[in-house]
Amino acid sequence: MKTKHSHGTIFLLLHSAIVLLISYVIVLYFIPSTKLLSFFSVIEESGDIPMSDMYMYINFRKGPAKLNTDITLVSIDSCRDRFEIAKVIEKVDSLHPKAIGLDVLFKDRKEPEVDAVLENVIRKCKNLVVACILDAEHREDNTKYDVCNRSFFAEQDNSNITEGFINLDSDGSSPVRTFTSKLYLQKEKSLDTLYSFDAQIVKLCDETVFQKLLQRGVNLEVIHYQPLRFYEIDRSEIDDDPELITDKIVFIGSLSSLSDSHRTSINSEMLGLEIHAQIISTIFEEKYINSLDNVWTRLMNVLFCYLFTLFCWVAMTKIKEGVELLIKVAQIAILFIAFFAGYYLFNHYNIDIAYAQTIVVMGIVILIIDIYHVGISFGSKYILKHKKINQNE
Image 1 (tube, rainbow, N blue to C red):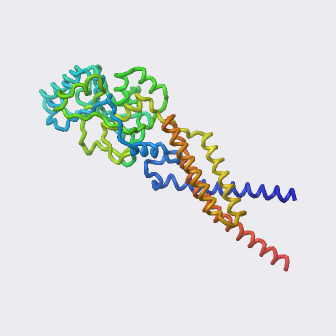
Image 2 (cartoon, helix red, strand yellow; image 1 turned 60 degrees about the horizontal axis):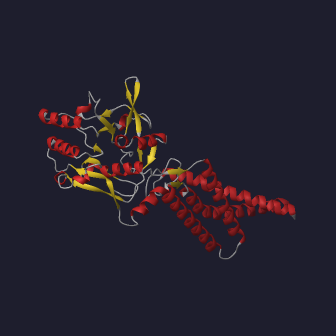
Image 3 (cartoon, one colour; image 1 turned 90 degrees about the vertical axis):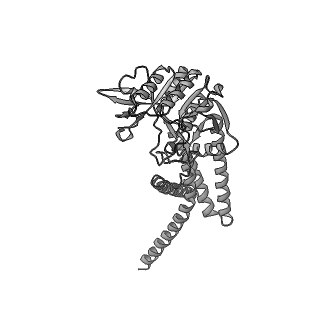
């Protein structure tokens, strides 16, 4: 009896392991080849869906956005030419902001006199970061670029000009989820460190915060999109509201350009200036999202899935009535516990636990058990039938 019981236990554990293996194979093959499950964002390289996107999406829609009083966005959409843009920069600088981020690329020279005025104003600003764009077509890997498109006044002598690349981490079809603090620009036979637009602004404002960002040693940081709104003013409103400029981080750029609108984790359209403001908020508030997606969490997920598979196998093979309801209740309970536990950890500790793939596997397990159990029953009957035929012969 003991031997029979031990054999039954071994077969129970073995069947559950086989079902789980089949489920994982299906999920690992299915998820990387489709975006059906990524309704909030792209699927990560690990094959898991970033739950942080869902948590930020919920936070954005819970209530009114909080006003961030440290950042002001100044629109230049009403400026007719570079001369008027130069006057906006000069006016903003005269009000002593903490830092100015000029999100405009002046690629080619146009009118010599006007260009000279613009260049002179920019060179006089000591706390100004100008934009440059790294050519994505010449990207060699995740850390190095060959081509940098600069404004005309930074092409040759840029010793007194602070530059930062404004490239957002997206290929155009995927949402902007992350930001890169620094990259390496190929310069002749050496590599020059080039910091991002936002990292340079942070450096001008607070060297300590800037060093903390670099010390994290993370190439791609997740943008912690928060329900924030920022001061938005036109150039005509600067004189009326100087307090919105003085001692603030000021971004100067377009607030209506469709070409600078991007899909994010929490919104189908967000202006580039707003994304930069969100990145600055993430850095200054140290709202860095730490993903718990390592070997130990994956092993825990596998173990959790295995226990659930074991439970489902016993329920579907031993219990005759109410098994479907029992499994559904267990699924819903697990889903709620996992979601709210993850939501709590995200909001209180900025921790993002990768468990979405586990939930998908648990959903498939039930179907696989049905198919697998039918297959075993059919195989057993087939073997028994041929065994009897052979015995009769």
